[in-house]
Length: 206
Image 1 (cartoon, rainbow, N blue to C red):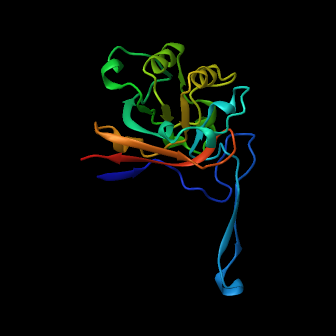
Image 2: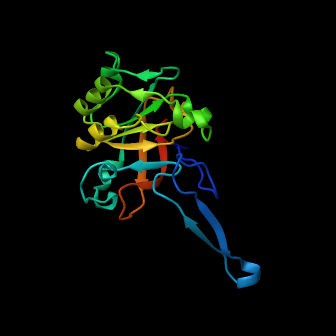
């Protein structure tokens, strides 16, 4: 078994979605002066690698910590959609995407992480592709970009209504492109919030 980390590190003043509050990660105590070390983190739940839960854009009061753990672990599948400005449905995806999986999309946009175009010019999923995900009862869609769509976030809302979670700002997806047998473990914090920062990994069965 091989483990691949699909998460970005959490760092002080790391890149965030335009308009979101900055991340603060500071050492509040150090061993030399205080006899122990400690750090303090101030972060919004949509910074870095994170999972969007339905409460993010639906008028519900179900925190991500209320969701069953089974939602966040599943058989993995990946589609290589690099270079596509619009991610649309293709007949070939029927055989590549099993039901109830966690589907990852390699768009190649992770190469621009932190740049303005990463947030402003990333591809969007089409309505037909979203319907495909719904029909396949996908547990979660994972992306190497900040969002599956742009304002007014209709795809977000549609997926949430069908209990499909969205993992954003993934990295290292290219390491999975020629892998057919892997599990995705995408655990949010047990936090009473709409969404959560997350450590997301792929467990490759070789």
